[in-house]
Every structure is written in structure tokens, then in C-alpha cells.
Length: 108
Image 1 (cartoon, one colour):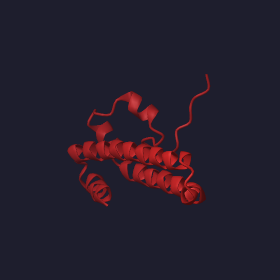
Image 2 (cartoon, rainbow, N blue to C red):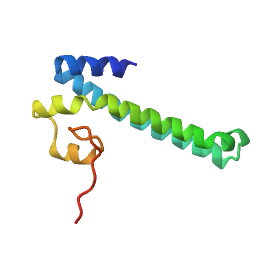
Image 3 (cartoon, rainbow, N blue to C red):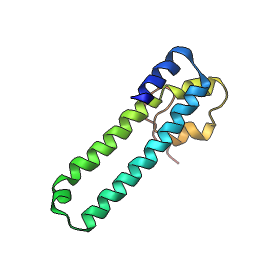
Image 4 (cartoon, one colour):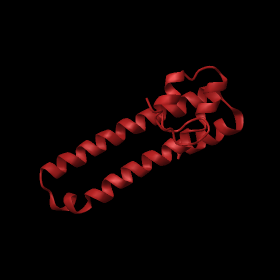
């Protein structure tokens, strides 16, 4: 919920510092998601029946929460780009582009 509040503020004010904080929170959430997924996989390796029964639900919820948060954070990109703080590589590496569409790799 904190990220949503910050995103509204970034959208309304264009505050560069808050946009930076939003993207830092995005990186923290990504790390937390990876750690939770790893813990879940550890429980699967242990053969816990309750984990086996809920594995799809567990992983789907983690993935969906990350995607929702990623969409919330997308308001930071145009603000940082306008301030000259968005590296060109960042736009290409992140699946959410400045226009809001899904990035697709260019054919080589």
C-alpha cells in the first residue's frame, strides 16, 4: 500500500526522489519474491503434502503480486526519464516500457 501511495504522489507531482524510492522498492520486492519462491521450493523438496497441494497457487500469487507492483511502479519511469536519470539500458531491460506496452526483443 505504501508503494501505491508513493506512486500516486509521483504521478501528481513528478517528484524525482519519490520516483527513485519507488524503483528501489521494486527491487526490494523482487528480492523478497525470489526468497519466498526459494523457500517454497525448499518445502517442495522436503515433500510436504500441503506444499505440494498448493504449489501452483503459491507461485501464482507471488508472481501476480510482483506484476501488480511493477505496474504501480511504472509511473516512475517517465519522471526519471524527464529528469535525465533513466539509463537507456534500464528501459530495454525492464518489461514495462515508458509507453506502458510490453517490450519485445528485436530480431537479430
